[in-house]
Image 1 (cartoon, rainbow, N blue to C red):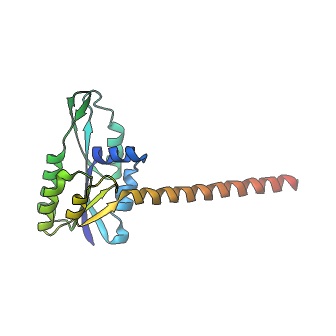
Image 2 (cartoon, rainbow, N blue to C red; image 1 turned 90 degrees about the vertical axis):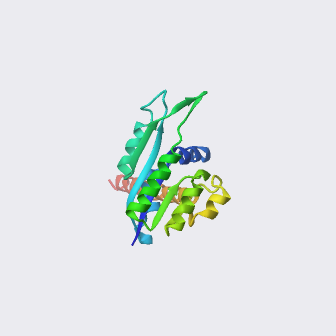
Image 3 (cartoon, one colour; image 1 turned 180 degrees about the horizontal axis):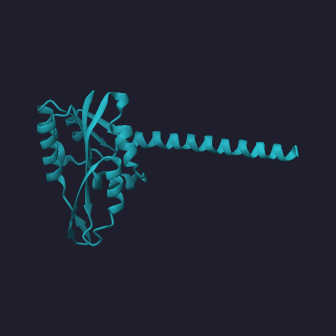
Length: 192
């Protein structure tokens, strides 16, 4: 079994998901896609980094609870106002946590859920330590050089297509079950 650690850059991935019209189920993503036992992986840790809008500090409480319940250890911080928006750079915290985990826990694989090229130096360092680094992101959001420096790429687009197809199939089954129940009810009423 390969030990896997997951690091989620929430703001980065959530922004990309919104851009493509996706809503991410983080429990399914973490436990179904990224740390699949079918692939001989065992999840030994998952960390999420969530920014807080200084104008509404508790607006992300629901997503933070969802991430905790999904199995992530959540790090959050209140950001700095910058013009009409806010900025919250988690790069240093994420990079330091990744290196600490790499040294102390020695995972076989680190999955970085982000499309941010600022992580390229960290990825290079991890690879020299013999750790496989996989990037999980949307195809159109990740840069070519980030893909090249990583050990592998997990296309979240394909994950959502699979999930959507499964949901459609489940809806069709439920609809067919409902219509067969209706048919049975009609048949039984006709026989009365």
